[in-house]
Length: 227
Image 1 (tube, helix red, strand yellow):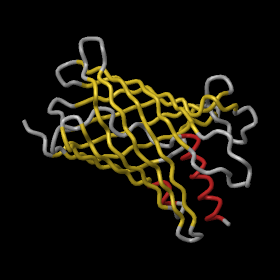
Image 2 (tube, rainbow, N blue to C red):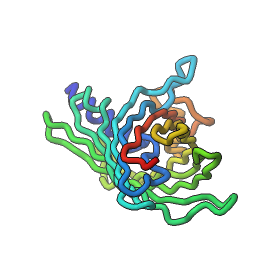
Image 3 (cartoon, one colour):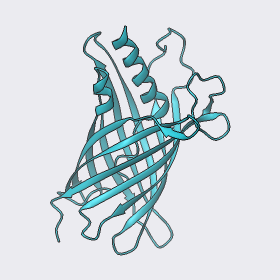
Image 4 (cartoon, one colour):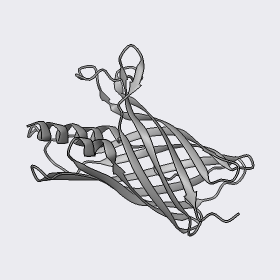
């Protein structure tokens, strides 16, 4: 029962709250590799905003200057006896022109599986982000929306699922070091803002009574970068 409950809990977090920040807003350069990780999740209102400690490790590779493939393993899920991972690509289709931003899209998936009871789920995801590079290091701010899609007709309680498309607005910043070999990320995401959480058992920190706010931090180490 503990394994089943843990699977349902993390699956719910994956579906309703998009339990990861944007993986790659700006693609890597061609033939670059990166490894990194992130920490954070929905904020709980416990006399202070405290993020649920969700974590993951990630890897990315630049197939071209405007196309990056990536994957991640969710380490918190593993502590509950589950395998959870996400993966996809980031494609940049518009370049910045003064104040007009760069724009990219990231189709991906989120998958979770429990070996003990043999249950699993997968969710398609599409991110759309705009970002503005600034300074010599080309750090950037970004704004976008994370789109989660629920494919199942019924939830864990055998009740019909009415919301199959979940939008999560996001805003973040990526800081590059002088040699552009390290990247440090921070992101705020408004998770499922169309859902009323007035009757939620978990005390989420949010704007009004809609959805929950999420906060994430992360880092990347860039490999294969030319000086």
